[in-house]
Amino acid sequence: MIHTDSDILTVEEAAELLKIPRSSIYKLAQEGKIPATKIGRHWRFHRPTLLNFIADQSASTIIVEGKKTKPQNLDFS
Image (cartoon, rainbow, N blue to C red; front, side):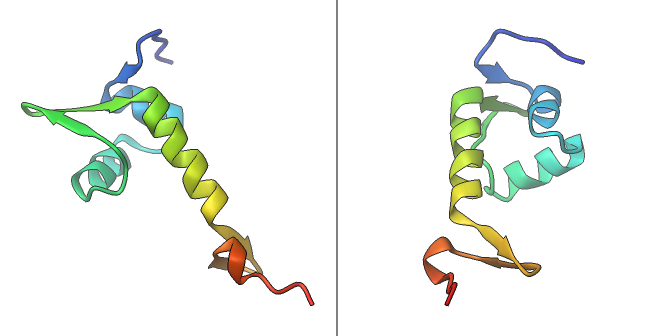
């Protein structure tokens, strides 16, 4: 387990924070699907930005009956 007080995270720290494999972090960062910065050959992640991004993603997608949908598209009638 990696503990840090820094707001700048390495790939390993970001993977631990999000509880996903390092390989997924690399792929998502390279595809621009998560907020990240490449410094030389090294990816870095800003903890508050990453947490806000994840919170925004969670709020904007809801799974209903196994299908992802946006909250405004829900019909409870």
